[in-house]
Amino acid sequence: MTHRNGIILASSLWILILFTGIGTAAEQAAGSSDSAQPSLTPAAPLQIKASTETFHYQLEGRSDPFLPFITERSTRNEDPNEIIEEDQVLTGMQLFEPSQLTLVALMATGKDKFAMVQDFTGKGYIIKEGTRIGRRGEVSEITPSRVIIKESARTRSGQTLTNTIAMVLKKEGEE
Image 1 (cartoon, rainbow, N blue to C red):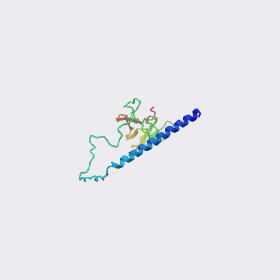
Image 2: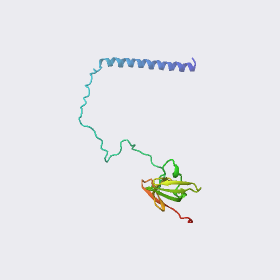
Image 3: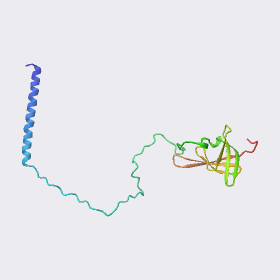
Image 4: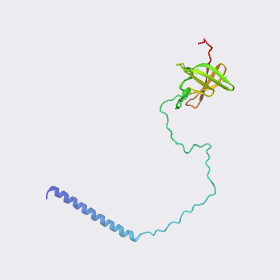
């Protein structure tokens, strides 16, 4: 017999011994468990008591249970007084900042007041109270000699900043 055949024969012998040992141990365990098998009795069902009380969540002094406990923090140092730019589509007069416009005429008809402004190309536009100008401005008042625009912006800290701009009607010949 060669060395290789001897290894295979020895391996086969160990496998045979191992399986026969397992078989007898399993038979012994099965035989011993038959005599000492416990009897199973069904457990009594759980009794649930009915309650007439209703649950009311008190929000005062508690956090919102639907918000996550952990929030992302900014990795950069941000200035709390920095103005937050809102993502909005700008249309009409919002495309012009008040400094880009020149007041050229004022009109009043009964209760309605109008003003005419020009952009840097000389194109004219008619505005009235409530017209949005620029990103943050709105015409708040039209007087006989000027247009008052109020700009408001929010900072990162939640503070609202307001600025008042007056567009004055220049007399003919004034620069």
